[in-house]
Length: 165
Image (cartoon, rainbow, N blue to C red; front, top):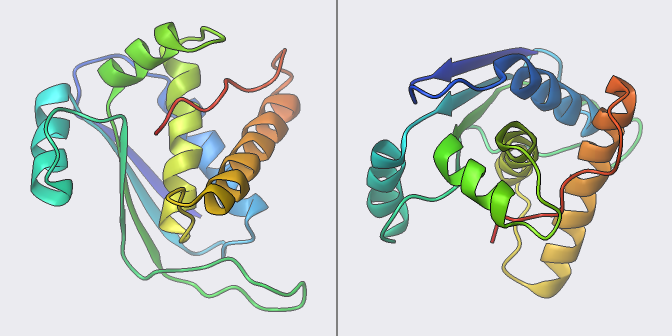
């Protein structure tokens, strides 16, 4: 799995954890091991520009996903996953930090970025949360992936509750 993490934000983030959880999420979703993903960490000004340009919404947001080859997880156990470019995930640590502070179960910026990374991966794989049933499926899968990764790393406690809208 080729995953690049590029921090352009000026904020120190745990890039290794972002890389590790992205790799874990993609393996858990049975994405081809030769697929490629890019994660870019930006400041609020850059995120706001992307949010306006692509979503026509004001202000910065926490995470944006830009799919490339529209890869999807295999639907059958014996199905071979396709190889390709997953796309880009853009994260904003300043927004993540505030969301972690505001969350029901307060958590760190890095924990929020880990959650947002998984959220971004799921969006790249075609998951969405516009409808209640889609939201239940996506957020359930997101929690299972984050909890599985945290357990594998020996981190205590459950994953942070979803703070993305």
